[in-house]
Length: 207
Image (cartoon, rainbow, N blue to C red; front, side):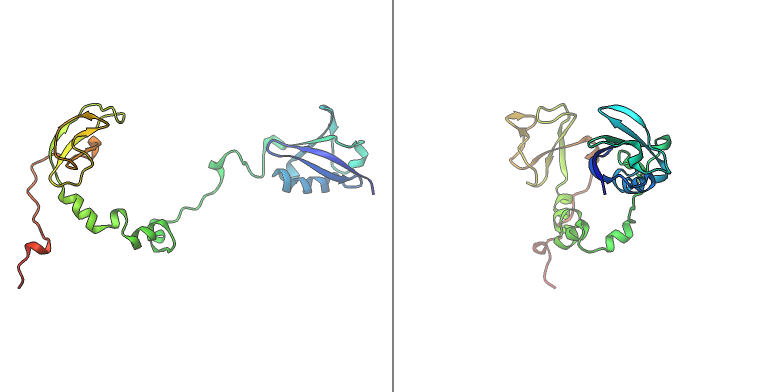
């Protein structure tokens, strides 16, 4: 049984295949469907030798009938460029999006890990500390050198900040160490807020 090694060329795949000359064109297309991703019924096979087209390989014949030589090229195109799978356009790939309610019930997810370890918004203690550290005054609202855009410098009531109003040696406002912080304007709410009550254990009398 005679065989030849040929190059298979398509828009997304280039490979070498060894074919038997008594293989039908239909059988070849079925084999190529798994390789190039174009349905056999939509394939157009063109035989090339040294970049010169020799003709289209029509159905109903054995591939040896087309005079294939070793290392010839078979180019695979789709009718009207239709493809079984368009690997270049992920927007056409159907995606499954799990509803938030079902995701929250799953285990071994990032969300469940955060809940278990009280990270981020699930850390009630840290959130309470941050809520209690109200900005006493807005100190600066001009362009900065440490980051692009407008940043608001604030002085906190508690030492929960990151600086003293200075960043990288540049002073934007002055306050005690760790009482200063910089936030984006959309994160700032201005107003005359009442002082929060201290509900710590030290402030409670024993009944």
